[in-house]
Amino acid sequence: MISTIREHFPILNQNINGHPLVYLDSAATSQKPRQVIEAVKKYYEWDNANVHRGVHTLGSRATDAYEGAREKLAKFINARSTKEIIFTRGTTTALNIVASSYGPSAVGEGDEIVLTQMEHHSNLIPWQQLAKRTGATLKYIPLQKDGTITLEDAEKTITDQTKIVAIAYVSNVMGVTHPIKELAAIAHRHGAVIVVDGAQSTPHMKVDVQALDCDFYALSGHKMLAPTGIGALYGKRSLLEAMDPVEFGGEMIDDVGLYESTWKELPWKFEGGTPIIAGAVGLGAAIDFLQEIGLDEIHRHETTLAAYAEQRLSEINGLTIYGPLKRKVGVVTFNLGDVHPHDVATVLDAEGIAIRAGHHCCQPLMRWLEVSSTARASFYLYNTEEDVDRLVSALLKTKEYFADELG
Ligand code: 7TS
Image 1 (cartoon, rainbow, N blue to C red):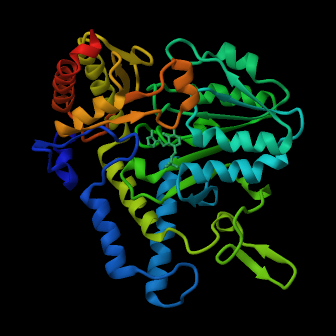
Image 2 (image 1 turned 90 degrees about the horizontal axis):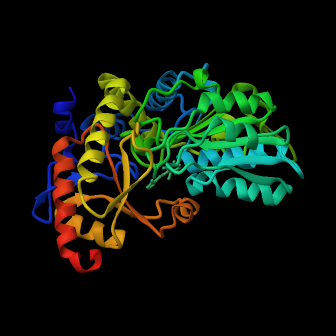
């Protein structure tokens, strides 16, 4: 099945600067299969209306489509109920809801919020802000040389003072997977909740929020074949029930008076305003597509590809790869001697290859790595060994081009 996957992605069938496109930037955003594009198109051509209000046919079709997508997502990550799935703009918004709604009720002066230095800014700054507002302290589980953490260190860092542990399941830079289930058990033993940044895990591996026993889980649709602008927050029902909404206005209310108002039940109390209906429809179609292929198959394909990429890249003299040796996800971050990653990315673009260069929204991690930026190739289900070969030969060309700087 994987071998014919590319045909489903129209965007991949083009030349960039005279070369067939090799897209190695799926950690930033994934490409979209025709099935998703068509679902959004069909929605706008046939079903478009606002949700949860009209009694007319289009209104009920749009509502069914929107709520149907919620059911698909709930099943996809094995939530207990659709009440536990709040549609958001993406991971950033989802994490901000937890920090600004759950945060102040759970965290006070002297309490601790535990993170790692590897977190994406979206899973760092909301907690910094919460700490500033409440007088809580941020603590970091130390990183090993390869970017992994140990449960021993987690045990030492998480204490009875810890109220929130916030951590990515998969790093967007290091290709590292964290032991969420074990961390959840440690957090719970101390009476803390665990908030999981699932931006880079949900697209690439089977996720079961009940088996992980996480309290909150954030994800972005656009990294898992869906359109931009749609994502979700999963939360355990009892926690979400007790939380206040963060956005107030239409859609999320039950009864509105001049001085007091009441909210709808879950999940709608968190979805103020007209929601991202077409985005949710696209997310539903993306989930169908991922499930037709199978997350285990996708994960196996990416792991094989990452191992091949690591082996081929390590043959290039002067190239440093960051992260663990046997990575389980398709993200490979590297530097080519002292050549600036932006220069590497520019030469690769001239060869039709799209990678990302920069700090990847992880400036504290860059400081820990003692670099200002890195180059990153990230793989998804539509990438092939041939893409890796193209990357390697373009990097060899880059090396020749910058021979002086490489000494
Ligand atoms: N968390 C992680 C681990 C991420 O990789 C990203 C986006 C986010 C949160 C934020 O997701 P958003 O959809 O709300 O923006 N990561 C990247 C990246 O690695 N390159 O571009 C965006």
